[in-house]
Each structure stands twice: as structure tokens, then as C-alpha cells.
Image 1 (tube, rainbow, N blue to C red):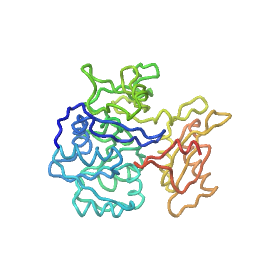
Image 2 (spheres, helix red, strand yellow; image 1 turned 180 degrees about the vertical axis):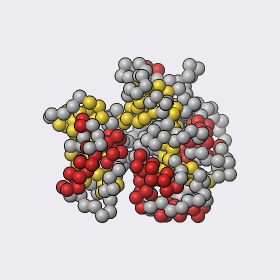
Image 3 (cartoon, rainbow, N blue to C red; image 1 turned 120 degrees about the vertical axis):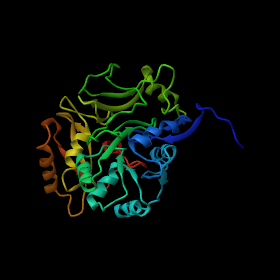
Image 4 (cartoon, one colour; image 1 turned 30 degrees about the horizontal axis):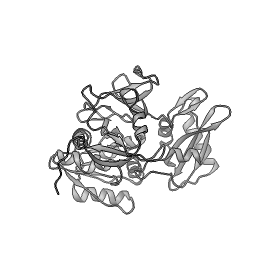
Length: 358
């Protein structure tokens, strides 16, 4: 039976990935699909008559970002492939067999593509990534092999695309890009004041005066207190820390929950992880803060090693020396733990909260 709906009616519920706590049910209304036009057209560069392929489980909001709304609205067909197990050669074979023109995947996929070797992909015109920060080393190697820059984007389950390396601008490695014209976004300090260029602040969304911002969620399922908390002060608090440089590009510093406070300094885990990822032995890494009597917190690196490398004391010392000579002393890696795999959410994000508690 056909039922009339309003643009403000609940349309879909997605659950957050649960990287810092239990997943929350996120309710979006019927304005949500329209807000993804920017996502598809100006970041993923899906095109009329093209074929777009996003790697994302359907239980993750990234499926909406790359498999349904924005792509159809700009006239692109959507490639969907059900992988039993992720295999880079199988992935690239699908891209070449069906003539994929635009591709989007989390950084983990690109890391494995770079490690395993990237074949020619002649039909591919554009590549983008989101979900976690991309190490510059992966950006360099992918671009060197394919000629395509990796365009990073940033947003949350609660929103659509907030920032990105957009069409018409040169992609900047490691940067979240620039603010989407669809949103009014500021970086603010803990007192709610805008921070100057170069200073770290929280990413907040300032809604328009006439009402709520389309594309931003309307409620948390059965959790009004949490909804009111993230909307305190009349703005939406993402909980993400970033800074803006002189050119207007934004740089992710980490979740506020993940920032390491060591020896009176605040260290974002991603800058240390990016250095570690340059070492050929490192397939994946996660940097966390652990209790330390002297420093408050010490920097610990959790590492998955690649084929041909053994998790030995010698490799531990080598990795410390490799990273620490490239980092300021207060950012030095003090502890290393080797693991066979990382604890991850269904969307493939590393659960730092689980690592801190273990």
C-alpha cells in the first residue's frame, strides 16, 4: 500500500561503527539521499553513463554513500560484488572485466593493493577513499602506479560528506580536503570558540538559521540524551579533532578519545602511524596511548607484519629506530606489540578502544 511521506519523516536507520563505544542507531529522514549528490558527483566523480564501484558492506552507511542514492541521481550505474574473502587480484579483475570508471574503498583496501601489486586498470578514471586516514606512502605508490590521485573524503554515519578533495582541485595527500559547500563547518575549542589557522579544534556543523541541516541525522534510536549532547550549544559536535592550514585544507588529528596525552603534549595517532607505514615490514598498524607513570601516557604501536618478516625483538628495535628518527622526541614510539590481526568493526575500522582495554 502506498503511503504519503514527508521529507522530515524517518527513512532509514544505520548503526555507527562502534570504534569508541557501543554502536548507536542513527536515524535519517528523506532529505538524506539528496544530500549525497555532492558525495557522488564532486568527490567520487561518478558520471552519467559510467559505472561506479564502492567497496562497503551493506550494514555500513558507506553503502548509502557509494551504492545507491548519489550515484543513481547523477545517472551512473552501480557495480556490486559480493566478496567471500577480500583478494586484491579478484577486486581488480572485477574492475577490468566490467569496465568500472570510478572506484571508492577504505584505506585498508588500497594498502593491500599496494602490497600485492596493482595491475593495469584502463577503464578507471577516478579513485577515492574514506573511513580511516590514508598513509601518504600508500597515496604515493598508488598514484605512481595508476596515474590517479587518491581523493580522501570525510564524514560520519550521522552526516553525508563533510569535507573532501573535490573535483576540479588537486588532491592533497593526507588531507581531508576542503569543506563541502553544502555545510557550514567550523573548528572550535572546548569553550565553543573558533580556533585560528594551524590550531587543533573540534569539527562542528553550524545549522542554517531557518532550521536543521539536510543530510544531518534527525535522532539516535532510543537515545535522546545522547542526541541532545552532540547538539549542545546549537551546533553538531562530531567529536573529531582537526586543523586548517594556510591554503584552506583540513587535516585530521584524530578522535578526541584517541588523542594521546604524553609528557604535557597532545599527539594524534595518525601522524605516528603514517611514519610506521613507510617501513616495508608493516602491513597494518595502530598507535594508542597506554598508562605511563613518567609521561602520563606512553605511545604504543600495535603492528601486523607482512610476508617475509617475523615479529622479533630485532624488528621491534628496528621499527622504533626507523620511526623515532623521523619524529619529535615527545612523539617517539616507546612500546611495540605484534599481532596477527587487528580488532575491527564491521566497516573495517580498527577499534582502538578495544586495544586500549586489552
